[in-house]
Image (cartoon, rainbow, N blue to C red; front, side):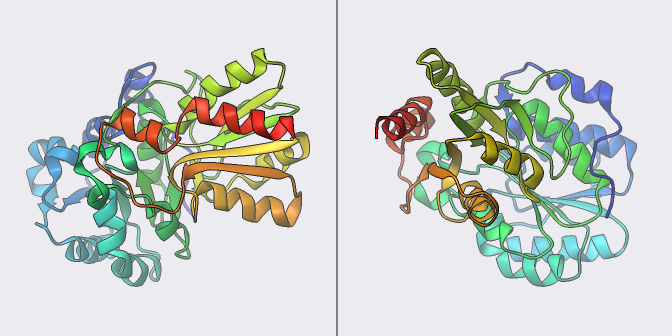
Length: 327
């Protein structure tokens, strides 16, 4: 196993602190900086480089960029081949295509051989917006999490994204990083350091603890402010590393909680909520409520409209907690 903590590029990563921006934008920028420092990094894309932001890398390093066309299975196969020759391939397209169309290639050619391929998928979740259900990946984390050997990361903001990308470039093994299309607020503190398999605990509450990742970390923090003012002692944790899960931190949280609420921009089936449920049911059973998309396809609308429609909001988290403590 390779390094699990980013040890370089501190001056490059600090530029993302405190900025409200899309995680895909942070990816495009940090990928170029990594490419300057490591000539083994190569990038593949499935004809969406302007949207995935790998076009920045293509412009800077045209001899290390490969547009595979609308051919996601081929992109993953070529990435596996490049990895087996010693390169560090980053393969990018929309999350729905990266994990759906190319699932077998990821399983057979990447993970079965433990190939050092980084799949960085953009446009995850329903905040793809008006593109509708066909482009909204709500099952991608579940699809990647179930494959043996795959690491799954869902960063909360641009600062964490830059650190995660720099870290996985140094880590040996297959990794799936899920990014979004829409701008997200800055939530991670300046002293934060991303590590694969580690969570970040903003605060541990005595009544309820909200475990979130991706854009839902910001909503969890808003919800905790409301609940704490109402006298419900509420904590928040960012579990960006869905696999491996930070089991030590989760066990401590479970022991401190009357209720755990998970929040994710994903189906409630197979994602972060399921990972938490599997662990605590075997190790420290505690009441659990899952916030996410409830076994349905998405629909077309603005990001804000869809988050409200599917209940992926601070208000929904607050109401879920209120309902539990009123019983």
